[in-house]
Image 1 (cartoon, rainbow, N blue to C red):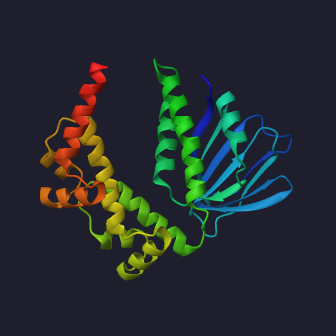
Image 2 (cartoon, rainbow, N blue to C red):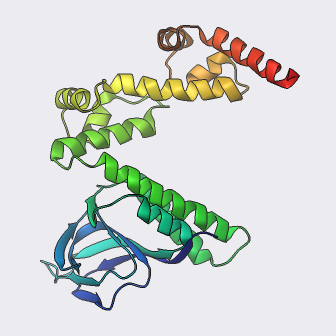
Image 3 (cartoon, helix red, strand yellow):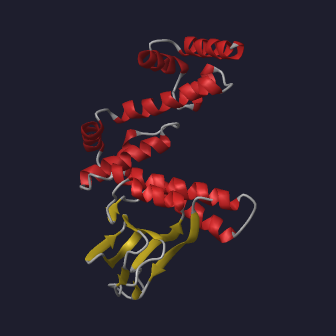
Length: 272
């Protein structure tokens, strides 16, 4: 495999804790702070990590972690996901671009989900296909880290709130959801969410949800066997007539004609 997952786990601290690797890391270290806070010293700088902060270090970097005494007895002082990894693919990924030592990525459900999957596969040990699955998951985590960093360039509260709303829509677009639910997920009132989302992304929340639904519908039409009415329902459209209307507005033809043209194109390829 082109990647190797050495350690992958979750830690929480209820009392002071330190870890000192002044001689330098032997492998890549990824650490996502989820709760509480800690201090990290590396490269002659001090970083204070709070929930939603991602630390990325490479082999040779010095690393000194300090978790302070919790403010109140019995309370959690710090919690994080972490992993150590290596491999030629990781080397290429690391050299592809310059990434901050600490990035604000927020509570990214996708990153946490991949991290948990990697933890589970690591705990299962060596099983048939297990190493290949870990390789795929680790690559997915690295690429998702790049996307999370890019999406969170704006670290102000407004930018983070609208990003949370965007992620909510992406997750729930294929089902019925209320705009009030999306706004509440971002911690905003509906009117403020509507205005800020349009400012940040140049489209309304409804327009973005329709865009996601239409993209999914196109894939179903191209490669699926469902009837058009079933596709409309599966992709979150309230009725076929509404689906027909927005599909024609986006692509200039009806869903039926689009499917017919795709079928003809497929037949021509088979003849060739």
